[in-house]
Length: 334
Ligand code: KG4
Ligand code: ZN
Image (cartoon, rainbow, N blue to C red; front, side, top):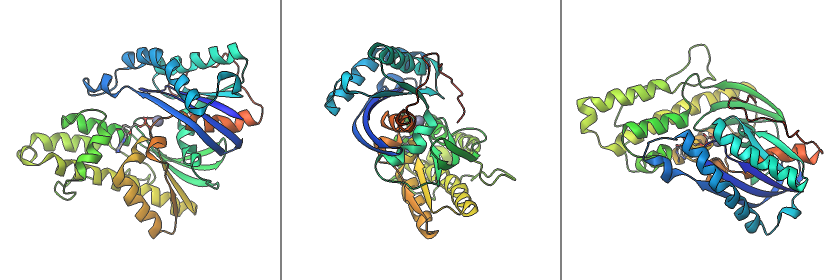
């Protein structure tokens, strides 16, 4: 079954074509992303109005690009999967309305997909991942631990009480005047830095060992930057120290959840899963625990439409479709 995926929940407009054989088993024929980094970088963060206006311009060309790379036309498609939440509502509406129009015009079944479900299943785009598995989802909007029991059956075991990890990366990059998007820049800068140079707090949520909190570290970095020591510290050393603290705060609950649940596989997914130090440290921690770590390639960690197509595919394969009346939901729960 050839499925077109459409994703526009935040600042990336993406389209992909996958060939789905069975639930969770697919071959990615193409995955195109039109990112807006240059548009938002001068503001140091995403401007929602600009994001949705640019999606209007790019969504059609990005779809043509995905079809061309996949070597197919609209008439070859068997279904459409589109993100319907959570995310910025203006951005979501562009992709959703586009998918509805397309589905109606060419008479295809369409399903609305939860963006987080896309991230959860993204590791399956490149390899078989037997269920159940534990997933650490770390993105700009979410940081949570899920037990993936089956397609459509996900239990949240813990989540952030305040900021998402990616948000912390982006805000600290802004405080340090490093530019946008901050995560990737800090990752690169940190490679040259001393991780032990600046002592930063590792927050834990009292009584909730599987929950996370990242607002404290952001405040700690802000205070440090105003101090005398802050002014004298090299940016790469602060970046490396900050990144190490975030990685510690992510790994602690993930390993605790793995021990508690007794799973043998842990998946690392979401935009922050692209972080080189997090990948390295979680691989070490997982191997010490006898766990298998699966993490998608960088392109499938950050927002993409192949993961949305995959997350919609098990429903489309069962012959399901959503009515055209489905709406975009900024806070769609999983
Ligand atoms: O999943 P994603 O593309 O969008 C959301 O669903 O939020 O994640 C974007 C987040 C941003 O906060 C970005 O700074 C972060 O992922 N990110 C990284 C890296 N690459 C992207 N964070 C740390 N290290 C990276 N290499
Ligand atoms: Zn995402």
